[in-house]
Length: 95
Image (cartoon, rainbow, N blue to C red):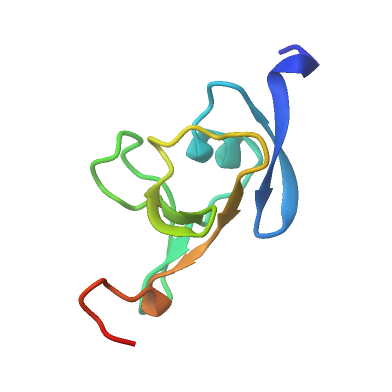
């Protein structure tokens, strides 16, 4: 792949390489990143179905929680964080 097809993304503060056309999940897996979120019982999860059905690949992307990374394209400079499901409040919860 030509270097011009590559760009940088951030994963929990670490700079990783991604390619145009890759989903976030593809880019993370290509960089050997396997943990995408942790359940409220602190069980690690990663992508499973790869087509947006199972929701196991949800992460925080550019500050937005619950983004399905297997269907979301990586973009230059995007910030991706492991999601801690026990800390994400649903819209119905009041602070």
